[in-house]
Image 1 (cartoon, rainbow, N blue to C red):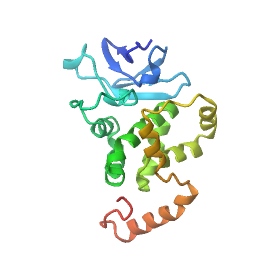
Image 2 (cartoon, helix red, strand yellow):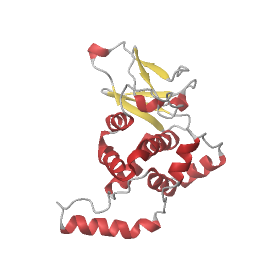
Image 3 (cartoon, helix red, strand yellow):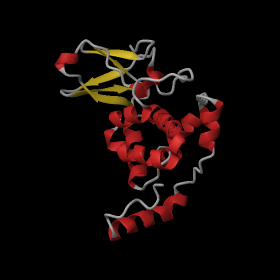
Image 4 (cartoon, rainbow, N blue to C red):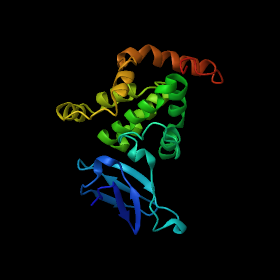
Length: 211
């Protein structure tokens, strides 16, 4: 049973889990080196290694699990940056984070929070597959990852469309994210070909689309 503060005790150590799981009963898979937490639909909501013996019994906090809660008051500083926390949770998506920072600049936190909501909705396994695909083809925005997920998991997308929409973090966040051209999978076809051609002809050449 996940506590109301979105923590779960595993082998005597409390770990944070994504906030949508707070106050819910979840299934946990225990492996030799890591564990997985499943959401009510049976999808992997998070996966992580056990802490070292020296840290057992301490609260283990992943700040990305709380990123979609209401923001801190203006002027608050301190703690790990969201981009750093995201890259630490998903080290295989570090290039995606760097691409977002180059392309979206000040909008990067909005896109990172949108990506985390997609992870919560579709499960970590499906999210990583879609985000890795977007990263490989230099689609550095959250809406491109969402389109890939909708295409790969239409049944889940349909269920989400019928569900109550998630309240935005702020009015500005929804407006800013809406200003980004979302495109579609078909509209990226030319970009895919161009990226592959450029990579094959000159693998050392910089990203022609990232900025």
